[in-house]
Image (cartoon, rainbow, N blue to C red; front, side, top):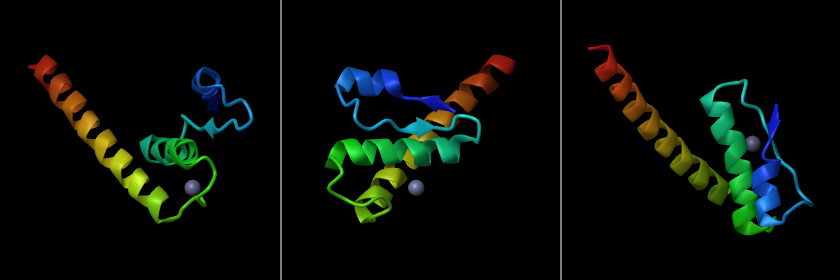
Amino acid sequence: MKQVADIIGELGAKKNVYNINTDTGWSCLTHDFSHWMHHEKYRGNKRPHCAEHAALELRMTKLVLEKLSKIKIKMEDLEK
Ligand SMILES: [Zn+2]
């Protein structure tokens, strides 16, 4: 379990620290990170797992899948 304390410190938001588990795979990492982004975006004024959070997590999931597929293609090119 790693903390995003560096990012939070840069933003000056020391009150809330989110733990992001980097040992459980991309889906959990994306979900955990979406909680942090949702909190930062709405400053705690919206509940976790609300419609806005779901939309944010979906956008993050699409971004992660897109980036991972590009990395996979580059790795396959290197193997040729
Ligand atoms: Zn959640």
